Image 1: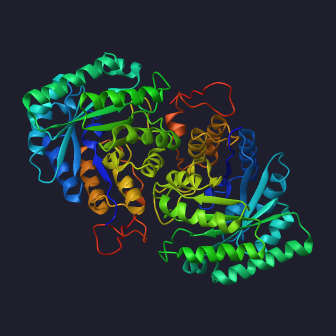
Image 2: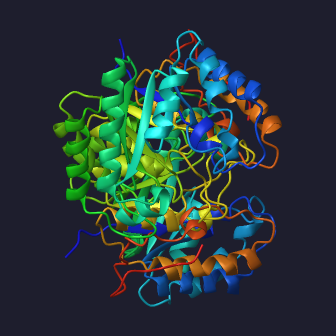
Image 3: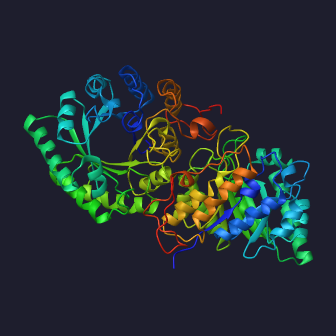
Length: 315
Length: 315
């Protein structure tokens, strides 16, 4: 038995967030089903933000209601506030990822309130869950954990304080996000080591962007200190509006390749994952797909965890 | 004092190896001088292969004779055999990097002889140096250390045997190369740990390609086990003929960014390094430059080791 690593698809949320042309709900669902067919067990399927702000997610409720019926899938959704959480509860997603920023400046720019006020909103969300006796998992996500394009440095002490607050309010899991691609492996090792100590057994997800090319180096550093849950997006979708030409989330195919090469079991078949890219190219005309393994092909030395023989993909 | 990491430019050799249009010798020299001005202390400037095989390196002797006069530069050159070494000795480079393959199949394809025969040639090179009483450093480089596109798996035991042979013959340094981009961080940690044990203080360089996206993850893993010398090429030049669209060597700017972010001192000013890219675009029309930091810009949180203030680069 190989040690297991979870790689969650966030392409449908983080990857589509900046994509202007609306992707049909049926295509989003096909993407989810193809992911699950490739072995993906968890997908952040959408964001419950006001449709006026991100029209791409105007189908959040309809999409979520279908996605939660996909066998073997944990469907999670991002929510920025109580109202979003209420809609997500109503849709029946298994998990809601409530995100606030460790950077005060970023939190103000994003949701027009202080980080402390966002923590209070998280308290209302956990209260609502308790009052309604819902089985939904409630997750605390911390954006700009590793630095902020507005504020610059984010004190590590502040990140740890927020983790403790989220846990004391009732977070079932924690996500630490490098929203702007500022993290480096030394910092990743330091912060996740302390995060694991603080969470004491509750799941901790690492959410890295590859904006400055260090995404997979940061995954490696996080694995080294015991992190086994990662966000990634198919084709590395999710460009940054402040960095033209820069990639967004770490590429999911490359991340699976990295993790499986190191001897961990993701449960994901890379070939099947790569095969979904051709659909993305049809559904997202004009979006550049990133990722190296899809172009270069798997090494002869790579043995897929889901196949009985070495896997060969032509260049 | 920060711990020091050496990043050697190999763009002039590995990066140009597959570039058909001849780059003028004066441009190659300007590239070297600009590198040195940015803080680069070592460059693999050319390869002493027969000009009929790689016309790009037909100016090896002329280039080397000028490059060795650049103040503050250690000019090294790749050589595939005794004849190449003799030309490199004649040119007066400070270091010759003799490369053979750990993969028998790759060595046969590359230099039409067995790895053992290549080791014998290395013996003749060290003898020549001794007889002529030359100050030139002689380095043993092992290609396909982490796997081979022809042979597949390369036994680690074989790599360690070759390291021991190279050292016993008289290698001053060792280079372990992931020629085809097959390495993963777990394997890198394992192999370099043993390599450092075998070399006992002699320098060990890591030479990674980014063909499958794991280049900087592998750098991180190598740093973790104590490696402090890396090859990289400006703009990530050096594509692989067997993987269209794939990048070649790890991108030098990104590698410097990674290493400096982690708190090491490369002595290199990234902004000056990035500035050379515009010249490469002129000198190498049609070649795609890779690298993320040049596109996304340095983080606000990044403090250049060579500046007194944080560095800002526009996207």
